[in-house]
Structure formats: C-alpha cells, structure tokens
Length: 596
Image 1 (tube, helix red, strand yellow):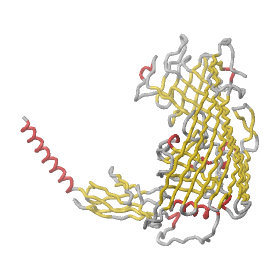
Image 2 (image 1 turned 180 degrees about the horizontal axis):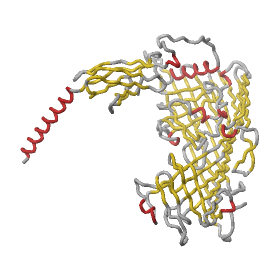
Image 3 (image 1 turned 60 degrees about the vertical axis):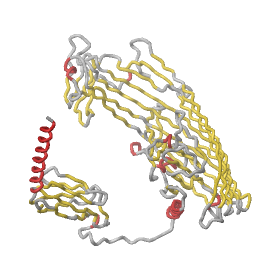
Image 4 (image 1 turned 30 degrees about the vertical axis):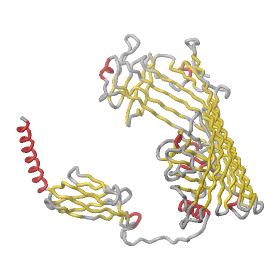
C-alpha cells in the first residue's frame, strides 16, 4: 500500500513539473532598478504594477524590482513613487527569458522638464548658534565611548512652551509617550517609559504622575536650563543597569561654557487653531469663561563672575490650552427581541456612540540656579537646584448615546420595533439611554532636584563624584478642589434613538424621541436625572537619593592607550501613593433633574 502511494506521489510530481515547465515556457520576467534621477538615489518601496493583471511588486532597499510569471509578449508596466511623476513603460517580454529595464523618476513640477539640469538658488554659508551647537553635539558623538546620540537644545530653535517633551520627540531613536495632547514620557526601542532612565547631569530624576511607577514624567520639565540632551543606547560599566532600552541624560548649562556674560530672554503667546480668539471661551473644568491664547516668558543668564567662579540662572513660565475631541462607536453582534435577534459577526448594528469634548490647560513654572567653582587647578565643584511646578486642569463633557440591545419597546402597543442595516439604526422606545457624564480634574505636580558634583582631571588621574537628592510630589485634587471628579446623569423619561446616515463607522445624524413621538432635547439638563458621583483624590511621592565615586588612572606603561577605572554607587528610591475613592449614589425624588 505504501509502495502504491509513493508511485502515485511520483506520478503527481512528474505531472506538476511538466505543467510548470509549460507555464514557464509561456512566461517571462522583468527586472531593473528605480531611482530618483535628480538626487541619484535608488528608491525603496516604489510600486511596480503590470497592467491587465494582478502582478504588483515593490522595490527593495537598493531600488531593485522583479516581476516574475509575466505572460510572454507585449506588456505595460507602471512605476509609481510618492511625490514623483508616475512612468508607464511598454515592453516585449520574451518567453522563458528575462528583460531588464531601469527606470528614472522625477517631478516636473519641482525639478522642471529637464531633470538633468538642476539650478540651485544662491546661498551663503554663515555661522550661527544652531550650527555651532550641533557641531559640539556631533563632536561628542564621534568620540563617545558608547553608542550615543546627542542633540543641542539650540538645534531646533524655539520649542512650543519650552517643553522638554516637545523637544525629545524629535530625537532619533526616541518614541514619545502621549497622554492625550501632552507628551508624558519617552521610551527607547519601544520598551516603555518605565524601562528608560532619565537623569539630570547623571542624577536620577523623579518627576511622577498619578501612580507609583518608575516612569519619569517630562511634562513639567523646562528646556531653557539644559545645554544638550544625550541618548545612550549602549551603557558603559560605569552606567547604572536600570534601563533595558537606553537612557536619557539632560546636561545642564555651565558657567564655564562661555567667556563672557550672556542673557537670553523671550516672550511668547500660544494658541490653539480651534480657539484663535482674544476673547474668552467656556471651560468646563471651572464652568466659566477663560482666555485660550495665553502668554509665556523665559530667560537664562550665564555669568562667569571670575575665571574660577560662575553662575547660571534660568526661569520659564508658560500656559497652554488645547481642545481634546474624541468619538467612539460600539457595534454589537448580539441582541434580543425582534430583528435584533438576527445580529451576528457578519451583520452587526451600531449600538452606541460616545462624544467627548475635554478642554485642557497646563501651566508650567520652572526656576533653576547653578554655581560652578574651580576649587583647585584641575578640580571643579558644581552645585545646582531645579524647581519645577505644573498645574493641569481638565474638564471633559461626555455624552453616550446608547440605542439598546433589545428590539422591542418596553411600553405596550408602542412602536416601532428596532430595524437596521449598514447605513442606519432605528431603535425601540424605552430601550435607549443617554448618559451625560461631566468630569473635572485638577492636578498639581512639583519636583525639587539638588545635585552636587566634583570632577578632577589632571590627565593621569580622573575623579568623578556626586551627591543628589530628587523629590517629586503629585496631587490629584477633587474633593479639596471644590468639585466632584465625575457627575453622571441619564435621561429622565423613556426614549428611543435613531442613528442615521452612517458613514465611516459613525452616524451623520442622531434623532431622539420620547414616548409621545416628540423630539427629545438632549441638550437640556432638565431632561436628565442625576444618578451617581464620585471623587478620587490621589497623593503620590517619589524620593530618590544618589551618590557615586569613579576613579580613573591612565596607564602610561603600555604601548597603546589604556586606563583603569574603579568606582561605586548607591541609590535609594522610595515610592509612595495614597489614593482615596468615594462613590455617591443619588436616591432623591424621582422627578429630580440634573439642572444646576
């Protein structure tokens, strides 16, 4: 039996091989390279399509493409690359052979019809602070003992609100972790903020938000007292082993970076494109009108008082307003009553639609002072302190339209029953609810960082040591802020909801009717009854103490550059959080409304 099976398999293989040979004899292949003729760069991921069939391929990293199994004879091939003009090529494909065709792409609008002649505008080479700053950063990268990216804070010019987070998101290798519109933290290699250490002059930072985690929150940190930012992806033996992906070190400005005094200052206004008005607009956090175009100011003063002593003082204040809009749909695959019993994975219906509008204000105030003192010929003692204070105010209004999961009305003889298709859903009376959820948040964040370092280097001996203390406190206030976190109310009488003109998974129109088949005004608070409210105050503390000593001796007795270094470090960190949650249920009269 096994022998017969093997014979059948052998025969099938011979038949398949013969069929493939015949097919190969009737087809051919097209290959070549695609490049931008102006820049001379071969293009990766250029799309190559054979007209009249389903043959589609993309170029590789070297700009090479291959179309195989193309029917022999005339062929029309299209080449497309974003922002360049598409090209159509007519070819004759030989049976069983390969034709090679290289293609040059260009853009007539940008480069002109004659792509081989490119006329450049006149330019002047000048030295400015951005160029000089980047030269310093590049030089540090070149001679770093490990794999490191360095970016000067002057390289990008002015950054929105002087925020460290807004700057870090432009650094190669870093991924910004967003909290709605705010950049809360960063991560290296996608491992998350908890696995990415952030230090200031080598001292661990403790900025914290909400919970007791290892993630360093950057939204309260200012940029104007920082000279450059270092991203280390490969640690050295002297680096703490507390980061899987890498670490970020904020290098503060030093008085010895300059030969003379320098004062830099600036004023700014920040506005959101949805609220570009000098008038006042409603803000749901405090239920009042507030300005949305907000001023800010910053300064930094570097003063080398003498050859051996100098100070750096910096400060910033800023406030940013932004709108946050969310829309979320929920599609149900099960239901009861009437037509809803036929719902399935392949035939779902739109059950609920959530709308959120959440204006947010974040104000940041920062002050730093640093003194550098050359206590001996080759030794410098530095003492610095940074204070960061931020306040975040959020007021979100949430409306959830839930059409229900039952297709039959709750009242006798009420109509209609629920019906739906991919473009609409018409609900049944009494099965729908509208939840009006108003939230308010007030978050205070502050941190104090003190860092004392001493560095001695005479060419043979190098001593690096430091002591630091960092304390961060976060308080989310509701109860003592004078408001509830959440206040929830629902419709006070039976209703039905219609989702109409559904396109792109969202309804273009929403209709709400009461038991008398009259329109229900969902914007009127008197049509809602309060149900629950709650508060959830949170107090979180992050305290870190750090000390280290590294001694390095150059070894001149060896015929090649060598050195021996020993050192030690100790870090103590304490995380403490004290959450408080209180839930209240409204059991008042049935005719009570949510009207203030």
